Length: 157
Image (cartoon, rainbow, N blue to C red; front, side):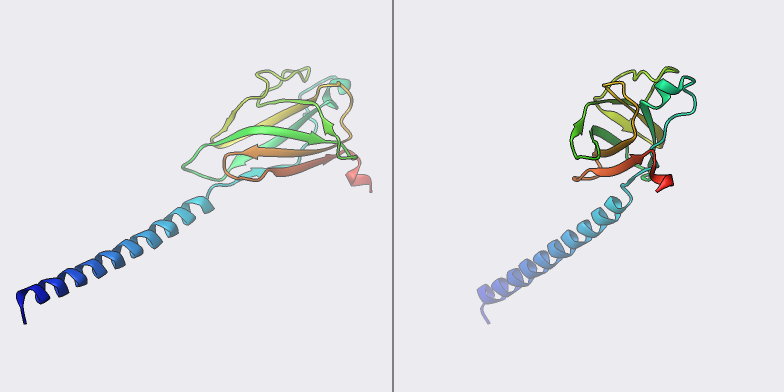
């Protein structure tokens, strides 16, 4: 056998081995990435009127949503909230991670960081009592919004 043929065979075997290792590395990387993504979840509790607001007229205009970040290694960001009434019409709201004793929302909207657990507060801008609200919460752990629903009379139906 000529030296050129032997060199060609060795280089072909090297190229095939290199391709096999590259493919194995790709699938391994995808597996690790999937495992890391599985831990990236935000859990939202049941929306309710906060107890610390003393005036009932103000309390019924504000909702508190408990929020928990399941991931121990990544911070999530809440990017937007949209609210809808029973008819599916958009309700103008103000939202933040803090509210005062009268139910006024401080540091409105924007980007909220969720490292562990926090409460999310929202208020209807019309100042009316919230009886029903479907809330879509957009965040960095999901491409689609999570939806939570507040229904003041759900326990009675």
